[in-house]
Image 1: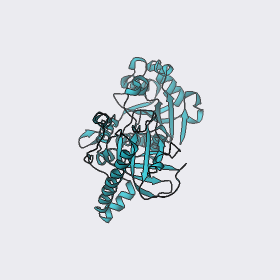
Image 2: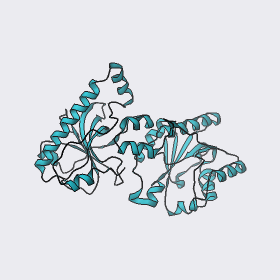
Image 3: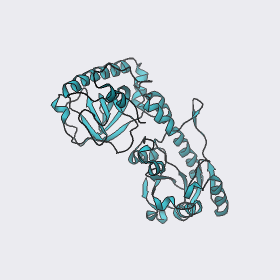
Image 4: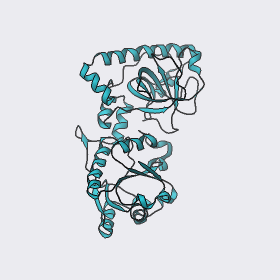
Length: 354
């Protein structure tokens, strides 16, 4: 897999490919179908598949904090694109210079002079260039003129609805992890390396592994029953808090994970966290004792849920879960406990921003 950052890093060896363009956020089953389309043409031409993505994503550039939350970081997106057949990723910085290109200039600089495309697979609603004046019709016209094929993506549906990143976000925000997994083709997960933080959890008897998150809108926010997987493949039932830790205050979002049956040092280790059921929203407690009491209730509920979910599977189901990471997942959020706290804080915290 080659990751090419910017047009200036394109070399002769990168030219001649089947290409597709988009955000590919989440690399869900619809995206996977596009890559399958690309594979069919790449095999005919005996050329690599190149995926063109933008960083930041265009809506992030224009809308900032009001843009939809990401499903995948760039690192994870690249890994998934590789797994589904992409051999090159061209990551273009989305900035004033790029957005000021006309549609024809974008085609000339990126697709013709830059990549030397043999065939392009792109949505028929794809818009690009200054003021979004470039469209599928322009691509097809230039393709006929310059000798490369242009083909629109095939619509991929699940339950008679088009699979999209926004649909996945809605399901995750509502806690419907089972349905989200069906659209993604895998269980949704968060990844990161454990870092040293305030170590407040140790002082109240609940040590946590802290994984910093990007300073972007959060897909998830609240407290969840999760399965934590370490680099060596070991898995542990766990409780995770995603957000800004309102009781102690935090300017940056953090993923805090307490492994229920683990003793040892996790600092510096990479971890994958699979959310399984939403327990509650983030709440600002009056003091650390109240926080500790609620954490103990969260732990009990997470353990009960995960034990019941795994225990209720047949041996075949458990084997399947090991293969695709899709179980145990709740189909809806768990009911909320009655929590003694400032009601305004609880209401605000329980609203998902995904």
